[in-house]
Amino acid sequence: MAGNSIGQFFRVTSFGESHGKALGGIIDGMPPGVSICEKDIQYDLNRRKPGKSRYTTQRREMDIIEILSGVFEGFTTGTSIGLLVKNIDCRSKDYFDIKDIYRPGHADYTYDCKYGYRDYRGGGRSSARETVIRVAAGVFAKKYLKKYHVSVRGFLSQIGNICCEFKNWDDVEKNDFFCPNVDCLPDLDELIRNIKKKGDSVGAKITVVAENVPPGLGEPVFDKLDADLSHALMSINAVKGIEIGDGFSVIEKYGSENRDEMTLSGFKSNHAGGILGGISSGQNIIVNIALKPTSSIMVRGTTVNKFGKISEVVTRGRHDPCVGIRAVPIAEAMVAIVLMDHWLRQKAQCSEVFQKYLRSFD
Image (cartoon, rainbow, N blue to C red; front, side, top):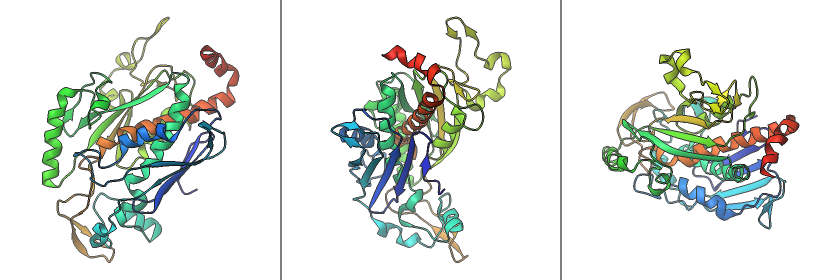
């Protein structure tokens, strides 16, 4: 296995590079009869695509999705779904000066160590450009889960030292930051403008909330729901940390504070983030991810080249000052893909138990 696929019952495989001809993917395991069209997918791709605001990379990709197979007359057929997004605005010449130089913090060095060869144009396979197919695949998962009132939504919760306290979901889609608190927008604007002037970058935190997830999804040991969510979210470019529920703040808590006490009407709290023993509890699943600052920056730095000599590096071209701004739909997609996979696994193994839940939607 070359690490290009995720999922067991709902399986997504992607291919393509940042400056290749196209990005593509295959979805296996999608149930038949789900209404979907390219317009449905395009909405989320437009949320992710570059060049849509002054706060992101100015690479102008339209990210037009093509459904090549698995959908007929507006419905999924149950067969493999083929997806394609063409690259139209590559400027590979921007990377020629650094083709033999390892950019600090980037995957240049490790790709050379693994393969002995690498595509230096925009980072090749290690570029965040690859995530366009994940977002497209996530729409299929969201569409299916929506039939059972399951929603997966995300928002920007922090950039640099600016924490964005959650106020409401309505504001998230009304600004370029996916920020749930409009009071933070002036500070975020000033921060990103200053970062861009310096040619530098900054990190971010994204929160994803899955609501109305039924209890029982997940496995008891190696395929725990939180383990698979971590696997999926850590596979996103630039993600360096993940928290389920209270995450690292549990270090400072006592057991009497951290446990989620139960009553006949439900849980009193949700410190566990909706997952207990690797299995969903029926509460909201809450996940936070930390994204590192973009490695490709204009600030001069020290590195080595592939010939073993000390060198200086300045990465020119078009890059995000904060990759977290466009990461919300990507994180949503990965959470939806994992939930969809475990939904189908639960339906297959524990059908009698799960059917009792599903019948409530008939």
